[in-house]
Image 1: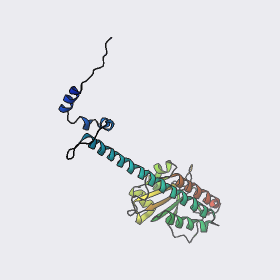
Image 2: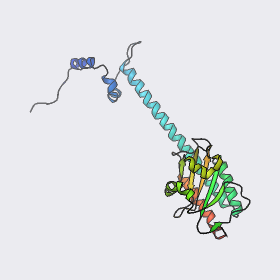
Image 3: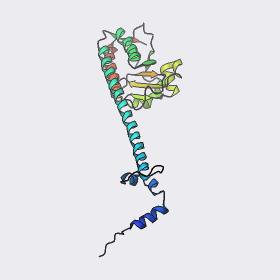
Image 4: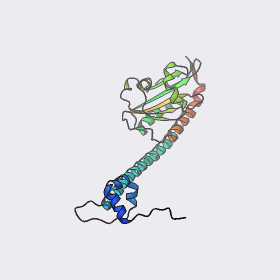
Length: 237
């Protein structure tokens, strides 16, 4: 059998390219693979176009790399802060020291504008919280309808970072709801969830979906375990 491959002459290629002057613009991958030399001064050559295309690709990759490095550094800093915070919380002598320490440290370590702690209870019993507490700390019955708007968030059983609805922010932050732009919400345990810890910022970029949440999940679990020993000290509703 004969050779089915079509052999093109340089003249045929030249004729085709002259009729399709935008060929290399529509075939950028082919342009990158060509071996070209520079053209005389004052003209725009394929080599220059190829160089510009490579330069743009390098700039894009450089930007992506910087973004990855930035997020990696932020996550490493977050890991260190959470680790140190957990150690300080574990050193608290009692509930009167633990709760204020938790609220103050969260504001400081996460540069937060607001922090809210919502604890859930069942039956007619509540955790005996210190009477001197003035921070945004409240207890709600586990069946309180006001928390139905958090059902999808709590069902994830993990930290959620980003934006909340105005209704959700109002439940957590009251009059400050409209100022709050981004939030990290930490469920306290699961099955059942014993509460919700929310760290908020007036900066829309402070807490976002790309943040590492493993360390925040760990903080939520640690907080629940630190509160658990005090659940036997209860007062009637």
